[in-house]
Image 1 (cartoon, rainbow over the protein chains, first blue to last red):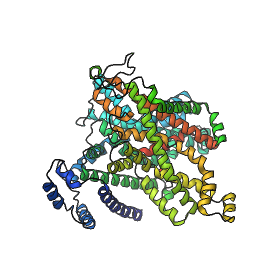
Image 2: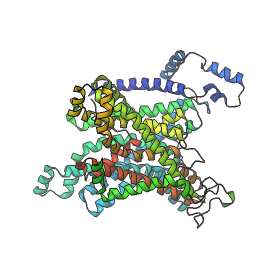
Image 3: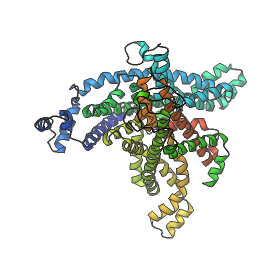
Length: 306
Length: 301
């Protein structure tokens, strides 16, 4: 197990380096003069030229690349073009905010989907199951910016129960977490339902029934336990999904997270900041992928010996 | 292809949503003629009016007719999704077909790369591509087309793998046909209908992707209407004109729903064994939009 973890961490380092290289050349391919972007449209040519020299943008590409890699490895991702703050300082707290939003949403999505999915499988092909299936289909087909705006209208503007943006009190958490969490829950519920139907159709369930085990114990102890393996993978990967959806959810609810920061930095053409955001987002995805893999091996010991 | 369509026609629910999807495309094609007003004509004295006989869905902040804009947005969405779907098909299918047919090292390398790309949610890849090509309608098409490419490569590859050991391919090899000839005449000919059907499954993802990018301001730019972008504008007027969200929200959800159900039903007709397992498959299809597609491949050691 330890060897596997070390192996994976080594993979992450390699992936990170490749990613940085990729981003460096990608951002060089963007049309436009980076020095001009920093100086502003109306800046005189002399100023642009001095910025170009100060940032080493007049150096050959290879020199620029090695300087860039050396700096990044020392934790220096450059300065934001607009706020002139180090990128790392801006990204850090934002990443934490996104983690909060994604974490609570995942918790909500997991509890809702385990409950609804199990109920749906218990009452398979009956009105309750059909109702839950319709709910999850609606959830899957409605983008979160539609549900988010409807939520803002009813609970924020019409009823005035909840604040419509920001994250200062617990009340600010309700709407973003509900929007993102329930959207995830819609997808999860179908997966949990399918896994549970599969598990409840197995022979040991029939055996338990014939022994007279109470139905509740059958579903939640025997059924859920055996359905849990694919569900764990799905939930683990749902975390990646939630982080991706957070970019949109943060824009709707003015949540000061990494996703919104990335979108804003793209719109203002703040390239160093965009680069930092993409890098950290990508590393989070790789990390999540790794954790899911390990979690899966932990949950299914048959795989651990591979 | 005909027997697939014949089986499809027997599925009432699928057929209903298929007709709905066709209706959307009909609206998209005829948008120029059926908009009740000019979708770009501004009239500031009639801004933010609630629904009335003259403006069924009211007017936006510039006094433009919302219904007309929703109708034109249907055209914009249909255009973007169709072109980017073709883009993915035209690039992905040849690559997938060649690596699937040839196999070996090339196949291994291309599959590793698609595996790596599938780690990242498609929306993130699309956003990164937009950074380079710039936020515009062309940008959305390129971003969607490229970010869905790994899926299409995989579809074409597995289809090509399934036919490369067939007798007619071997017969063609024995007859001395060159490999481009085999690929075009035998492989492509035999995998085209599963690929067309499977690509309908990707359609909802393209629609959601286009509207998400536009909602974020990274896609279609005003004044061109697009559902996501209209909702983004409507959000600023929730207090004074909440009716602005009705049209785009309903159109977008219905379009995604009908694309979803149609694709599902068509795939059931392609492979009748899948029947009745609709629920299980709908999730993995939409999920890649925000979400890596790990569960479709075995977890690698």
